[in-house]
Image 1 (spheres, rainbow, N blue to C red):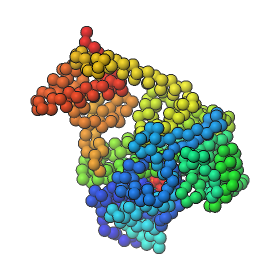
Image 2 (cartoon, rainbow, N blue to C red):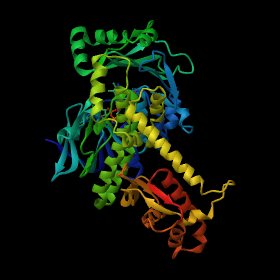
Image 3 (cartoon, rainbow, N blue to C red):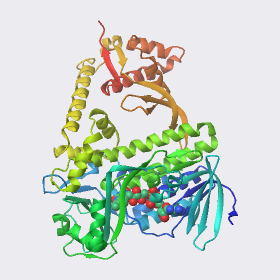
Image 4 (cartoon, rainbow, N blue to C red):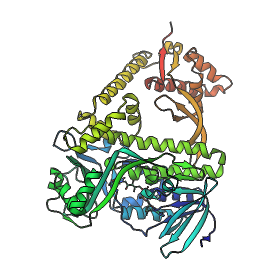
Length: 549
Ligand SMILES: Cc1cc2nc3c(=O)[nH]c(=O)nc-3n(C[C@H](O)[C@H](O)[C@H](O)COP(=O)(O)OP(=O)(O)OC[C@H]3O[C@@H](n4cnc5c(N)ncnc54)[C@H](O)[C@@H]3O)c2cc1C
């Protein structure tokens, strides 16, 4: 019989990066948070290679100084052997990100422990050795959980909100049958830890190294402990067959021997762990938030590990989930709309990595093996519907280096390349048109004020929850046909867009904006108007800027 417990404001299931991030952010908002973790930390976990996009989140959590002091290797980029050319090529985060030019190759037992201890310090009631057996729903709303301690003692915790960060266990997803498997990425990963692995030559010695081969691809991640995490991603069926014949260790060693460069790095090394096998199927949940609950990190979705995006997605969604829970508790009427925005934001970020992984998988022309051919064929169905897919990919921040790298190698499918050329030519043409409104000394020509802007089809302003300080608040988003979910914008920009009607000139817009406003703000209003028109025109959100007749 379960023992009812003191109610918590929020119960978090799972103490991985997603759960500890959500819990810390929630405790900071003053909630009473109970975090239930099945295992006792430090516990083993795959997923060592981080992205720089995680650094600002670690900073916000207050965990960055400890991560910096842990001695993890700084990861400055990646080195790959992919496609036709057998020579390795590297790219560096600093090429596109000056502010956060590196991330870390972390030893997960230590990294996850730092984040969980950080939650404790923030006031979270962390209970290790507590496995959640069920999420309790009342009339469709999550109202708490049942759990069991390692000694078998059952407990029931009643909560206003449940954050499911149970990783691939996906407690709520399984309970509500929400998981949809991705037919494109049905792989299996086999991996282990090696001592004595050689590093790449400097300056790439702390990079992740990825090598494609006929059966799939291999990773080598150097760690500060002196070991290297090394693994193979192969087709799920072929992997299972191989493991049946050779056993996990035999199969791992056999795969690693097939990557020429990886085998060279491992020549003097020894496998010092068991060989682990994990199902590496990508999935997404059709609903990532619902009444009284939200899914975070791998509990919500999992994307192929090629771009080391898992921990970043877990941290990012942990921050967003905390904001969603805070808004849902304080303003129940906003819960559903904020949940939809949570899902859109998560899916947008997830999709960037999925599209890129798909691009890499579909463009590996090096091998005619079953693995690559199967993925090239599947990729043809939906992947590169040109412009919109491209815009979605390049609009995001973290993975830019990757997609530029593949484009420079000339491996991208022709549709994708032509859509990039089209977008770039369009932007250049628009910039030239805008420049014609300036005098050679960079002064705005008076005719600019007579020009009439037209909005592109599908452009509009919607009122929606937008992410504010630790919570969602009602705000404005600018929607376009390629980003129907919208981009948050200020009230003034929303007003400018709402006033663009295809008849009013820039000076007309200026006059309307200044109506009823304090004249001391005239300058800032005019500058905002000019900048907004400029940005929206180059982006083609303003489709035409018709010069006066
Ligand atoms: C082969 C492979 C390679 C990868 N490589 C990388 C990489 O290089 N970089 C990267 O960023 N990501 C990588 N990932 C992905 C990464 O491992 C995950 O995305 C990340 O750990 C997700 O964090 P999370 O907090 O959502 O889940 P997890 O880290 O899995 O944490 C979930 C926690 O929930 C606990 N739990 C589960 N069930 C229950 C329950 N019923 N009750 C209580 N607690 C429970 C678990 O014990 C666990 O501690 C890789 C994944 C795979 C499969």
